[in-house]
Image (tube, rainbow, N blue to C red; front, side):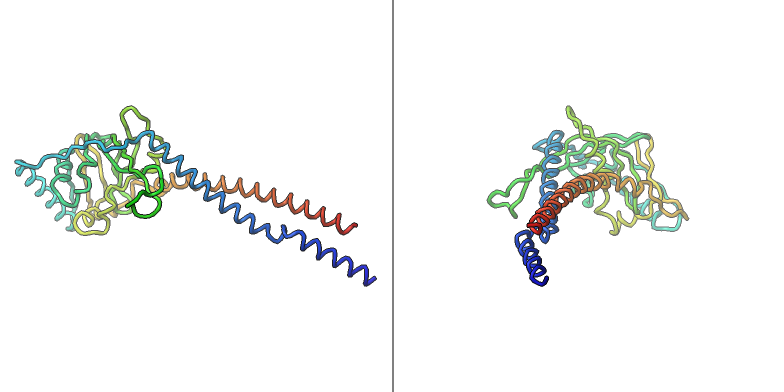
Length: 292
């Protein structure tokens, strides 16, 4: 009896030694998932770059910067309007200010805090329904290996989004943002997913928490569109509320994560089936060896 038990144990040990699959199954599954996610992410990145290349250009477009020479009177009126609104907003009362498209373009050309907008953004027109902005934004192009003299080992050639951005202004966490409805590029169609990913466009993100523009912006209670002008309002006793919801902000990201999640789940199910079939096959082989 002891001899038979010893022989059975020896067979089990032999089978275990010959079949390490069961002990490595989890590790194999983890490695497969990791390789899949890395490969899938790279594939999505290249597909995204290819889609962006369809409506972008290799060179930036010329975006006009308003001249400021011989416009002292206009600059003085603009400065007085901005300062009056700042003082009123800092006080305890209500305040309102309207800026036309040309006044905003003049501010971009004249004031240092707006220098990054020069040559990349210009207010084309304002109506009660929308504000149209001429843009030439630099984007990252298709990833490639870095050339000699470039930092790192992965780089990309820039692409430029040249067109007209159509939006409505709003407030989000005491910050002025643009809710995009479309981006028009002459002769090309901008993917809806790209527009959704860019919206809301945080045009004033750089000023959050700072003095001057950031301080005034945090006191705004509403931003309204009128005929030819944008109206900035601070209403006394009213707490600023968001006109752009967090759900709108997260919508595009949620779609992307959902896409990744579904793909990962499908792959995990496939891996689980392969492991299950492998374990069943191993069990049959073990039974066959034990039966000999």
